[in-house]
Image 1 (cartoon, rainbow, N blue to C red):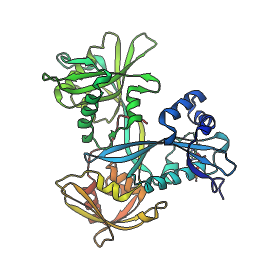
Image 2 (image 1 turned 90 degrees about the vertical axis):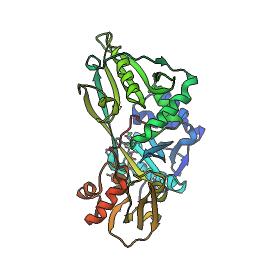
Image 3 (image 1 turned 30 degrees about the vertical axis):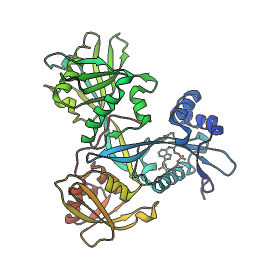
Image 4 (image 1 turned 180 degrees about the vertical axis):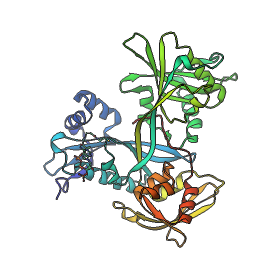
Length: 396
Ligand SMILES: CC(C)(COP(=O)(O)OP(=O)(O)OC[C@H]1O[C@@H](n2cnc3c(N)ncnc32)[C@H](O)[C@@H]1OP(=O)(O)O)[C@@H](O)C(=O)NCCC(=O)NCCS
């Protein structure tokens, strides 16, 4: 029997703030004050605690409501962050119990997906999360940005410009599988990441429309020079992308490097005449399919594909997921129905996450032992979930 067997998973109360700030401070090496600020800024209604029968709260997590783009459509997703267990209470199954309850709650609420960055994959794999995307750090030496011309139509953005920024991101992000459809929490981190304010600049076309923007901060180096760090970057046309590069080039007198996160195939890099940047792996992020039907029907698919496969699915936590399903795509829309006779792909809900995101194809997942089945089923599922390598600029 685990210490967590009789514990309940509850919404955090005001009276828990001091205890949970201590748990989070030890979990993430912050101060109790900054931890208290972090969780109150997230909103207590989004905080969950594990409460043991004696009333103590040794564990917590944060839920971040948002969505994520797959196949060009926004799929409701709850991000999980701040998973912490008090140092004296670790190794007793609290985190695993809390994550199981969290996954069940998200299903009951009809949330399609859950996503997270992990410090230990094993904990989350046990409850059905699998690798779904990657985040790299890109370092672009400013002296090597040899684009001709200047940023002609750039200006600092104001609070009043926020709707333009949101509209620009909404036009940009759906092209990239895995990009967040941010809620207030993640937009807040674009403007202020770990207590560092980032300033927005907008790039306009001749008609005065915002076609690109960046959020930047400047980090002093011991040499007295500095690096320009970005929390967000989006552009809709090659002209806006080149304006952004030309704008960065003009930081050269006092700055060495532009630093941002995303994919090695980031579109800004594709506009450079020479590939003189470095890319370093930073993080894997994981997803969990928390509501099968919603996850399959709310995402987008390639409208040119018509395919179907029988999924023989197993889910340890959400019993109603377990069984045979026919999943398919027609005219860019996903279909899902119970039962099925055709070629069968067998997997756990965890294996499905890696294929759903597009990080691994079904044949790659089969090689990893994450699914099984014949080639016909693999190819049908591969056609259904085909996309581009999932990534995101955000860290939450
Ligand atoms: C990670 C953490 C939340 C685990 O809490 P816990 O209650 O001790 O975990 P559990 O006892 O429920 O263990 C569940 C599984 O998590 C994994 N896990 C737990 N502690 C781990 C550790 N120190 N290193 C690697 N994996 C670990 C194991 O897979 C474990 O299952 P197993 O014991 O069957 O192998 C806790 O150590 C903690 O708060 N760490 C600091 C903050 C942190 O890393 N949070 C996660 C951010 S994504």
